[in-house]
Amino acid sequence: MNFLSDWSTWFPTLLDGLSLSLQITAISLIAGLPIGLLLALMASSRLQVVRVTSVALVEIGRGAPTLVVLQLFYFGLPSAGITLSSFVAACVALALTTAAYTSEILRAGLQAVPSGETEACQTLGVSPLDTLRFVILPQGLRIALPALMGFAIIIFQATSLCFTIAVPELLSQAYSIGSSTFNYLSVLALAGLMYAVITIPASWLVGGMEKKMSRHLAHVH
Amino acid sequence: MEHLQAVILGVPLTLLITFSSLLIGAVGGVPLVLGLRSRQIVLQVICRTLVDLLRGIPAVVWLFVIYFGVSIGAFQFEATTAAIVGLGLVSAAYMAEIYRGGISAVHSGQWEAGSALGVGRWATFSRIIGPQAFRVSVPSMTSYGISLIKDSSLASTIGVTEIVFLTTQDARSNAGGLTVYIIAALVYLALSIPLALLARRVDSVLRKKVSR
Image 1 (cartoon, rainbow over the protein chains, first blue to last red):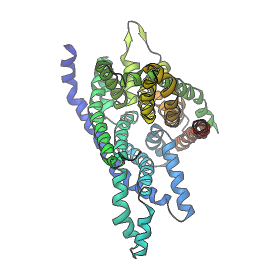
Image 2: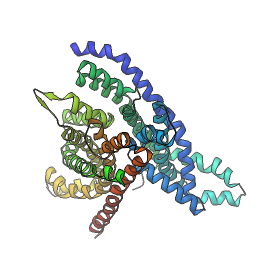
Image 3: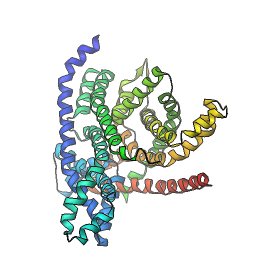
Image 4: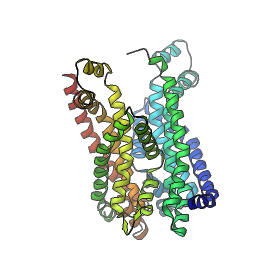
């Protein structure tokens, strides 16, 4: 079992890469979700300018490949006088991608809360901000949760693109081991399994959550 | 303008990769979904594992495995072929899940009706359930196809000269800077918007057929 000894030699290096991938995922989600929420709220604004801005930002963010957004921040911005380190560029780019995608998910979640609740709050004299904070958001976020977790898996997979801007995450580590040992297949297989060990159980979790949350629909047909 | 010219040369390869891998996915998804629904446990487990791995491992990793990892004797995949095969395999897994959703959307009473009338299991599937499931699957298939346009940009990582590859090249050599990336983003939008409109038309035509 020659490859097993190879794998145990490479494993610590790849684990460092994996931990960096997870850090980028966490930062992108933490920074991106509030922006996504803001964009979602802007999309239902009464001012047309605000609505159009939100839709335009979201459509561009979702329409451009993540690879283009990443490279824009790393290779493109220096020409505008802003130079980011590769790690920061990766976090900023993926946070904005997160914002664009999650704003659609959050918008759907907020819209799923019956509008009668907003009207009830109005009638009871609850201020719009309190209505949002205590009535709409808690329910809307709960509805959006499975889809948001599904997106978290996607953004974790997308961190593998960061190797194009020289972030030493999991795929970069695997590739550099591959190019020095010429044992690409073996090291890439190990890296692939390390991704799968996280994404596959996570997707089971999301599936279970979806099932649990749609339980009340089971008898309606 | 010169930046736009540089970027637009990548459009044919982007489209070639997108459509070829979509075709491989649409065809390859069928045996996979049959395996997922098979009554033979072994076949079911194999297909489930395959689909989970294809979807769980990032597509770039698959491209790298196929391009750098696979060498049978002197044979190695050429970059464009590797990209098409890799994205095609990943698409097949996603398509299998889409088909599975479509099949379960067809009321199970139709299976029972088929068996009550003495129609075989395969004939029930291929003549009754399948066509309806396909129509249900079309919207998800087209939105997957649109996301595949963007995923085809992964081919640039193994040196295929599609849009992103040419964009990066232009940014480095001709000081394209920010402009060329924004142009590239707009080109992707310009490619996906007509497809989205077409998809909506196809869907409404199919919907009319079902409701009649």
